[in-house]
Image 1: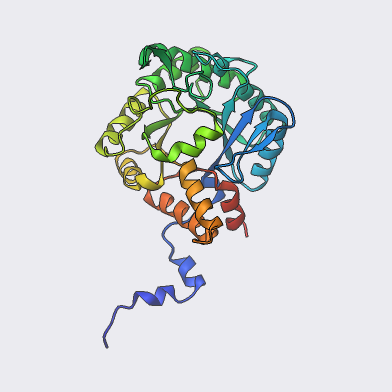
Image 2 (image 1 turned 180 degrees about the horizontal axis):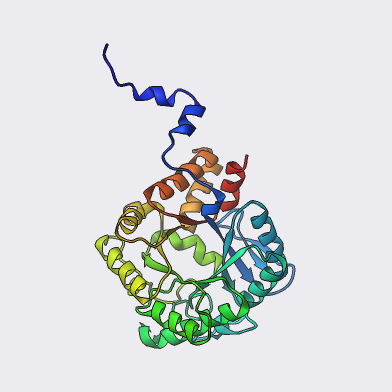
Length: 323
């Protein structure tokens, strides 16, 4: 009797759908980004990222406890310093906001895995990710500063460092600096395939890192390039990366899939600020169901091959998954 094969048999109810589901999400898959700033008792909502905040160290410890209580295993810290200069010296200040936050969180929430973003853009007066000569971001002089920053995070107690600058050779520079100081067990999660994306706009408000001139296309990847991502990841693995990341996630699912297919290391993907804010805005207008859209997007990133998802939706998604 036609049709003999009826795929709908396995979609009849939620029980059978769960049983045959190919991709599953867990809070264990998430890393939640936090923005730490100077001052005390500061909790300033980021207008373009509803539900996300710039927080002083005392407030971010409380937030970290909430994150951990939801079963989310890790956070990644971004810093907003009180003072900026040409070389971003607050990035590697032992008493900088990130370094203070690491120590405070590891003291009060020791089970939470603390990852730090390693870049200069939040700390430089010009908003670029390295040392400037004329209008050019100089690659090799920047490596020493990135290594100092990563080392300062490790000394403060960071569990992992994550360079996001896209300077050539920065993974090796950081690995060497960590190893030379005895931090041989501190892993590196490299932003290996980071594209010059239009979806970073809200983050630049959050991190106060808008470039004062030009843009970042001379060091971040061209969105049109797919094969180049494999090359970038291979180079970072050769230099000592332990986890490799694709950023953004939603518009680069093909790249996530390629990296998963080509390499055996864990693959992370960053569900970036613009991807988050688009869903938040559409939901506010009543155009989409926020919860369903959120879970569909995160599932698609996992389905594409991501083992780890950095996402501002982590808390909301964990609450759904914990029901």
